[in-house]
Length: 416
Image 1 (tube, rainbow, N blue to C red):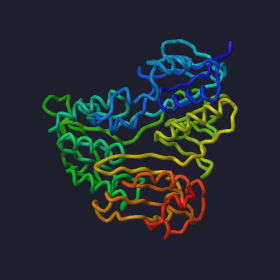
Image 2 (image 1 turned 135 degrees about the vertical axis):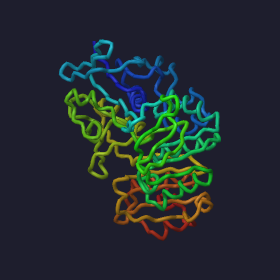
Image 3 (image 1 turned 90 degrees about the vertical axis):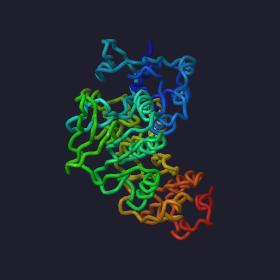
Image 4 (image 1 turned 30 degrees about the vertical axis):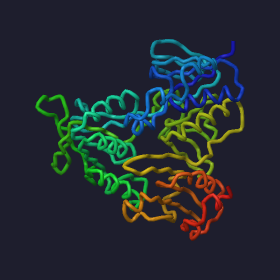
């Protein structure tokens, strides 16, 4: 009997791979193992629409359970893989079951990075990664009137800050840098900070957390203590300081790991017939020649598709520019591009970022390297991202004046 294609990971990358395998004509046995008991679902809404109560749990699913049954995809949910044995093409589950495979996709994702300070394990200290985390966080925030401290000033931290304020809580964001959103230039990051401040969010930057202090009960968080000695009162503390890839299985199996499972551009690992995709993969980028690990949903979606086609022997490469989006404090943003090429690139703006009112009218940021677009971001200017992606892919030399001029349609520049 033909051994199945086995997918480890019940997230978007794994589901995308399963869907693509069937769409590409693979009719053999197919098994997906997921640590959570839910069918694979989308994570971005957990800090956005779902946290705000604007989406139901059913809306998160990549596909409903019936699709997997109809497509003949065996789901082993609530199961954790304990060992990959490449020599015998087997995976051992924690319960002891052995699963043979013909080809294996590792899409085990990432876990929130812990905060290594005293008090990090107190009640009231939370992270956000799973549906249960978002449900518990929503339940606490929706009551309003709480003092919320958010440790981490990245996208997740700021999205939760916006949600917490909308529920009527006091919110303080603590970040280690002098600006929020460290991957953006300060003048662009400040647009998001100012928008949050106008809603009442307070920022402490830079802030180095030394301890999370307990209240009178001795078990529940009551304050975040900074290295300066300042105490930030807090009934709820969210730790949002990044995520670490789940590479332990791969490392123990002898698969090359370096800030993620190392793959080529077709998502093949160092072991034959073993592939990796999504948050856990550090993939070769054909456009830049380096390895990049991306935690954004678009990478999981496209990575699952590429891995599936690659497993079937098709010519497939993960060569689309990374994409992500955010919605917070009245700002809707989309970003496409190679962040590793942005350093030292020329920033060109279409529209104004001088004050929040002007920014809310909408602007576009372009990053040019040697005259070609390597990244682009639109804020409150919908339907621009298709043209931005096309301009990046074209590698054409662009006129800065045309990029700045709002009367010149981006679609025209992109030839769309």
